Image 1: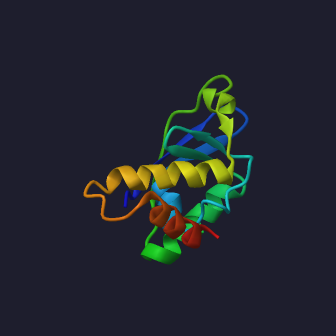
Image 2: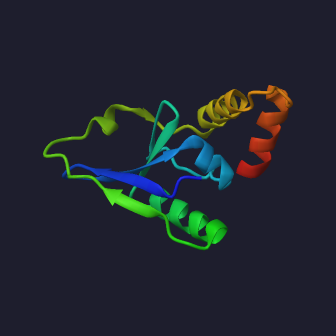
Length: 122
């Protein structure tokens, strides 16, 4: 589990970059709002609510604070604003796919992995 996360911002807003498998591990895949963004295997959690929700879940599970690295603020609108809005259904499928790829020995089927992630996320 990574303990360092990057915070991106522009003059109007900020986002915390979190890998989807981290959100799955914390049971947050279905708790993130569509005010956040999704790109590749990461979510960009908006600073007003989803960021706080993540911090609370992380501290509750690991009994420590995550390390947040604040990157220099962009001087104009961030490209993050052009990413896809967060959709928990899409995030759930992407996380299951990522988990299946990590399961190199193939001991568990994709449907078993998806079921596990769904039970953690709802």
